[in-house]
View (spheres, rainbow, N blue to C red):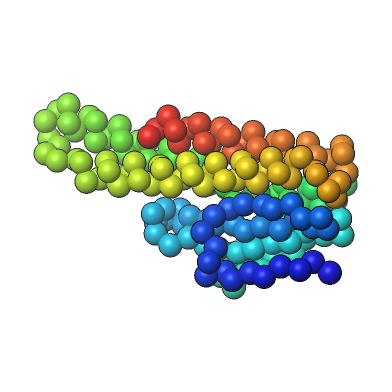
Length: 181
């Protein structure tokens, strides 16, 4: 019964929209191997009964398989599933950011040694990647806040804490990205 008109080619952001009978939205996820390159885009719609994903990239299927393989819930719920889904979106991001940090440290050391002639191109690319990740985290934070607000009362009140936990983790990644930039 959820009506939505989705053209995945027009998706460019991660966001959620509250409707009177549903929550709909999109994800635009950077490729961690080429952050400034094309993003993977998909959409979702949810109500009190569950969530549906619209994806022709295969990313959602991969995330779902990871969740099935690695998670065993004591008390399964829609909220817990969404929490785990959001966790999968940012899995490995701290390692990516740490790698960029180490690369920046190496460039700095080489500059101080005098062995680096012109690092501006690589530093510029790293700053661009960090900007893209910062924007991605800001959009994920907005989405998690929208879920946490629970405007349509789709979620069990005690389980809304999962969205707060997601938002905290994403916030730490955002802060790390902003610091590196």
